[in-house]
Structures are given as C-alpha cells and as structure tokens.
Image 1 (cartoon, one colour):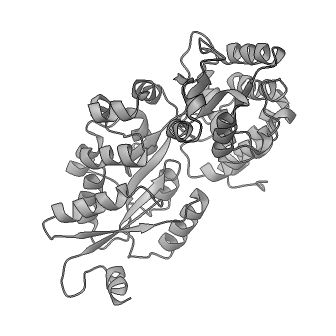
Image 2 (spheres, one colour; image 1 turned 135 degrees about the horizontal axis):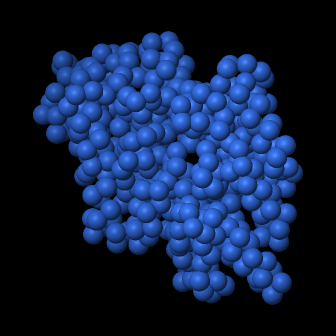
Length: 406
C-alpha cells in the first residue's frame, strides 16, 4: 500500500528515482509489462515505468483519462490514446506537442497513416504505438478465388445461398463504433470522406450515398447474417468459426482464434485484401491502434518523452506483435522474419496500412461517430440519400457544438 502511494507521488520508496505512470489498455499477453520493465532497466536508474491498466472498454478508458486530466492530475505521465482521441486531447491542452529530437525519433521509420492519427493542426501530439486493420477472411473450400469488390462478394454469397451452402458475410452491423468504421472504410474507398480536409464541415456527398447503399444492399441480401444488427467483431469471429459464413471482414485476431477453435475449418481459412467499392480503386480500410502521448501535467515530461519512445521501439513493438498480436507501426518490422512467420498475412496487412484511411480527425469525433452509427442502424433501414442528409445535419450541429446528439 505504501509503495503504491509513493509511486503515485512520482518517486520510488527510499530513492529520488522518478516513477513514470503509464496508463494504457489492459494487456493480457504480458507484452506491455515486459516493455515497461525493459525500459526501466535501460534507463540506468533514471526512472521506473509503472504500467497502469485502464478499463477494458474504450469508452471507459477515455472517461477515466478525461476526468483525471480535467482535474489536472499530475500523476499521469504517459497516456495510451485510442487513435481517435489525439485531436480532442490536444485541443483541450491535456497533452504535450512532440518537438525537436523526440519528434524526429517518433516519425523516423513510422508508417505514414498511423502518424496521421497522432497529428492535429499540423503538429505531432503522440507517437504511434501499434496499429490495426481489417482484411477479408474467406473459406477457400467455398470460394476458390476471393472477390475483389463488394459487388463480386455479394454475387458469390448469393450463388452459395442458392446452392444451400454457408454464405453469410460477417461484418460489424451493431449500433456502435464498429458501424462507423465500416461506413468510414466504404466512403473513403469510394473516393470521399466524412469531413472535409480541414475538419470544419461534413464532406459526404455521392461517395457517402454510395457507401450507405452498399451497407443497405448487404443487409437486404441473402449474404446478411440474421444477427447483423447486433454483431460486433467477436460475434463475427464466432459465426465464422461455427461454419455458417463464407466471408468475414475483421482484424487479424481471427486467425489464431480459428486455428485454436476449429482446426478443420482452419485448413480452408484464407485472407485477401479488403473488397473494393470500385474495381479500379484500392480499398481504404480504416485503421485502429494506440498512440502514446505525454500528459501536459506530468512532472517529468522530458523523461516521459524518452520513455514513450523506448516503449514503442523495435524490440518492444516486435514483442507486442508476437505475444500480443498487435501489428507494429514501424515499417521495418514488416520485413522481420519472426514477424512474417507469425503473421503469414503480413504483406496484406502492410499493403492495407499503406493505403488505409483514418477516422475523422476532430475534437468532436465522439459526437460525429454517434451521428453516423445511430443514423445507419439498423443497416436494413438505411435510406441512402435521406440517411446521409440526416448525418450531415447532425455532424454540422456537432462541429458547432449545437443540437442534441441521439
């Protein structure tokens, strides 16, 4: 008890060594604790990193950080931010800008799109820790050649349905952040975006109507799982493992899960790039991940910047990838033999990351996401043009801090 109190005060018991409190998602693999221990040792006694686990759900993580930062809590040093939070936290002046040598080290060798999630108004406010993206997973025994487009995929699913074979397309259709991610991927793949480049007003337009139309078409087709309006990533995984589906749009965690839970289906479990909206334009799947920021109220900001860089260095990112299943943000690791062996789909993941899209970069992201996910739920009820009109009005209000978000 005494030790934890002293750690919260910022130094180890009986010494002047600063304790840097790192708040991040709860990692069950042990990779994050291992990184904290390594960096503490590498500091040569100049600091110790204490890894503190945030709640498991992203909303709970954000809520805890927002409350403590709003209270100017100086016991927070390094913050693990969801990729949608940097703009909000920077605008609130809760996190410090990365400049000078620290900034140079943060951007060197880092994938371009994950860096966008750490940037707000042209300034770097965090360093990408890990990233993530979706691929198309399919059953080779049902579909020898994977579809390249959404139209092809729905046609294949329809043909399988007529043959009485497993044919569902598993995707995140519940009313939550995952539905926004699906829409964001489709609108960017169609050549558009939710907000304009300066994030000052909705962009939407014909690409948004087209994206909404694809979501509606899937929901009304034989390809739709009856549970689509309630499905999140894990329900998609379980449905695919149960054998009722032919396709799944999901993150790479499904691969080891299928291997462990259904070895028979695993023999035919394959992956391919995310389906395109237009045959001549690559898909732009939305990336996820965690960025590391330094609290504006940290009493040891210089050490916190140094420690954050250590936590996401090559060795620690490789450990997080191999033991925690987290795709790295350092480009060079995608040529690492150990990573390529563990991730046989690493080339497809890298290609997806290099053409990926980010969710709207705005301090009002939470409200923007709610406007999208509530309007497009359930997907079978989408009326493409009028639904996009509704989203435009609600985002307009959100950006102006007006109106009541549902």
